[in-house]
Length: 510
Image 1: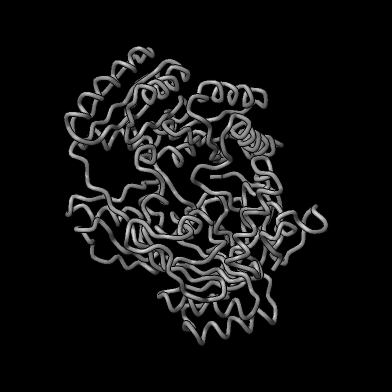
Image 2: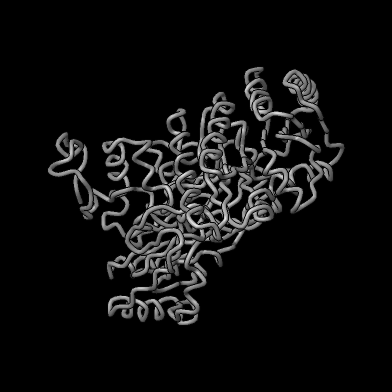
């Protein structure tokens, strides 16, 4: 599988280039020795064949071999590692399961990769308060598994929930199929224990639903590891709904499917999920998992309603009418959990399944207003046709979070470059349509150069002021999110002289 890459930064590589090798120096050698004494020799890796295991996350085009890998097994290991990095002035990057799709966990060649996947303690569920406290390496689906006997669940459900970690979900503010009704990770985290980039341990939020003062927890969630490392997280659980009904609807046109989504929301109905797949995505899913979607469908919707039984039944009938009015040619209603699981199986497997119909592909992640779905999907196809490429679409239609998959063949000269250009153009199309360059995959290494398409220089510098308040030395996940690091002691960039925010007395360069 190939996924989208971007431009070169310090310690990273562009698509198709060799792996950036680790930077060995007296400084990193001395740090490795100190780390071995602090956390144990067996938890510190420096051998090239071992550290190369961690050279990338799910975005395989960016590959950097870290100088040192630390396999933390406790909060104290995290504290000691971060503190020693700060004392040595060596950058560090935190990594969970490595399933990210934006290069957010890409290592620094001259730094430490702090692996958190062994921090997997999941405390007993507090059913009375609908909460549970977990370590960052806990897998997403484990939370709902442990909550299920209490008739509770954890709402955020990324497609990778079988393997993705809660710490990574928090870093990227992950969503999932049911984010339309239940929101993203930020809506389900009550508190976090965080190791700041100087090694200090702080607590943001807590067990209470609301806290006075600035929302530092909200700032931390989705900060992609640039503000510190979470070592413990208190999660909000939801009551399992009384009734759940799922339908699969087939259409002969993408426009009718997209129009159905807008019509449902306009009718005042808030589904738990509305997912859409086009013909290419359906073809791939059928090849991979034989999900049995309607034959000949140009697009399908997976629509799920949940809540009180009477309400679900009434709204479900209304959704059926809306779908028929938009020329749905086939509607299937899941009779039981097994049929519901099969409907979801095609959608959940779609990303990996595309490998069945294309040698390589770029995964993208942009957001548009859902009312713009028909015209954006039409324009996307025109752009793809112009380059002689195919785009498979599978996405969270209810909130306009697109996941276009740009298909190409590495063996055809120049096609990878054309596909990468198209993937970038799609992000710009999302922005000009009133949307965003990312909905849940994050900016990471991949999209950082697109940030300037969405934000002004003043916007980006203001964001940097927050980052500098947490990490004045710029050692926490450097080279991510921002197109040009400024205001944190690093000086690349166009701007000269005093920044307007500084002049106004609202911020300072550390």
